[in-house]
Length: 181
Image 1 (cartoon, rainbow, N blue to C red):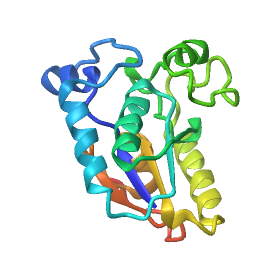
Image 2 (cartoon, rainbow, N blue to C red; image 1 turned 90 degrees about the vertical axis):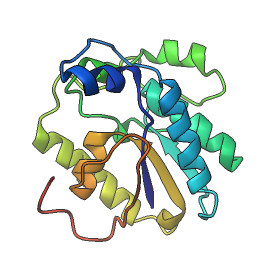
Image 3 (tube, rainbow, N blue to C red; image 1 turned 60 degrees about the vertical axis):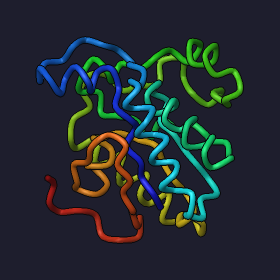
């Protein structure tokens, strides 16, 4: 399975300079983030991806749209791969707003307010990651799945901190990480 961190968002661009939460809820991608998403899509063209899944956050949906366009496929939305809700950027957009922006996406499975309360504790994130890991490990096609997700979720699954647009190969049948960067 492949994990892709979304491209740089407006939040990421501001936070990287100030290290202070700029208070931008559910930010969009920057031009750099769109470039990173296109680069990730190009890097994935040789992989046998049959299913692309994205978090419901705007930055992940925009990243998945770009990757899906490069790969010539559609994608689905799953809130289990969302962020931990530690910053203002982790306040999502209501499902009705997402539906108006992306009417072609199936969003009926989402609650109107689908993101976690501030702040999801580390143990809850790790429990969510363990559930996702076991669900994916039970699939016979997990090797053909790519997921557009977030820093916190990737760290919870792999123990690694990754930058925007990073691609991480992930085996859900491997042991859970015991150390975190």
